[in-house]
Image (spheres, rainbow, N blue to C red):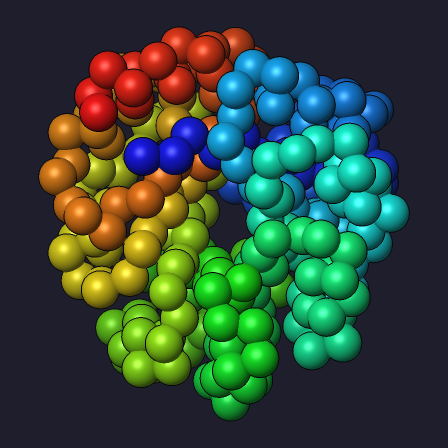
Length: 242
C-alpha cells in the first residue's frame, strides 16, 4: 500500500483547508517546492498535489510551481484542481506530471471517455463524497445523480483508478469513516486510493487491516503537517505489514 503525502497549493503557498473551506485555511509553508523535496527525502513514493486556486476557479493557477516540483523531485506526481479540458490535460502531462485527477470534469461522461481514450491510466477520477452525493467545483456543488451509476459509468469507460475522499472528514483529524471506506472498496472493481480524515498511526493500522486487493494507497495531509503522523513511521508500518 502506498503512503502518499498531499501538497495543497493556494496563492503559491502550501496550505490545508478544513473540509475544503477557504475561510478555514492553515498555511504550512511559503515554499511548496521545498516541502515536496522534504517528503521525497523522507521516503515518499508518490506525491498528491492539488491546485486549490484551480479547483475553485476552474483553471489551474499554480502550474509553474508544480513544474518546478517535478524538476526538483524524482518521484511520481499526480495533480488535480481545475483540470477541465483536453488542452489543459495535454499541457500538464507534457511537463512530465505522471497523472491528472479529474473531479468536476469527470461528471461529464463524454468528456471522461475522450480523455481516457487519449491518456489511459494517466487519468484518475476523484470521487469526492459530500452528504451522500458527488461533490464538484471545489466541493461547492453536488451532482444530482446516483453514486452507483456514476461509478458504473467510470468502470464502463475503463478508468483504472479513483481517489475516494470523504469530504466531511477531510482536514478534520477525526479519523476516517471505516464503514464508508469498506462499502466503497466492496462496491467498485477499480484501484482505490483513500483520502480524508487520517489522524494517527492507529487510523493507518485500521486501514491496513482492510484486506481488499483494489485498495492501493492512502493520502495523508493535515496529519503529516501537524505532526500527528510521522511519514517515516507510517512507511515502516506499511513495510512491516507487507
